Length: 227
Image 1 (tube, rainbow, N blue to C red):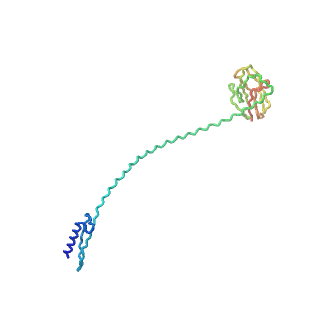
Image 2: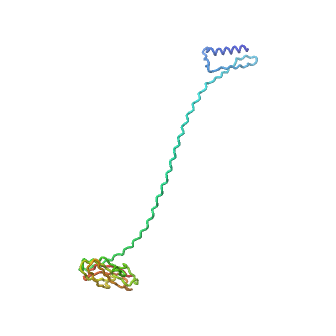
Image 3: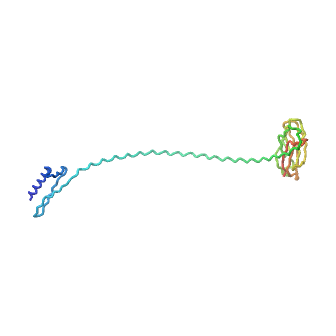
């Protein structure tokens, strides 16, 4: 038996070495054949069992991919400097409220046909005051109170390019004549005249003092009140 099995193995190996037989395809040279002999059971004859182990060629190891470049960090942007605070404008001081000017009195109309004796005579200034200092009014007022001052002065300043002329200062209370004071205005640029009038408890009312010539022509009228 052993001789027969050895002969069969030798014949198989020779057959594989000599090529193909009856159209069979030879195994490639890269494969190796291994024969394993199995011991048959007692009293039986079994052909040898051949186990074939085929080894595949090793696959190539893939090349590693190149590492991606790390991006460079961007430089930090500078922090902008804070803008300086704008100065707060200082509040403007409140302007004082101007005192209202007293209303100028409306002169009484000149009587019809009363032409001026001195047509070029001009009254440049006039006032009612409490006293005269250096030929000028001390304090100009339009309202007086009874008992505050018992003496009032009517003051006038003229510009008279002509010859001297006689005039009168006429005092009126509530439109009615109360008193007359004669005066004379000479030739000159700054001719001044005045007249004093006393007031009492019965003199409360609206007053005027006028500059009048002999024809009744009114050159100037100023008003005041006594309370």
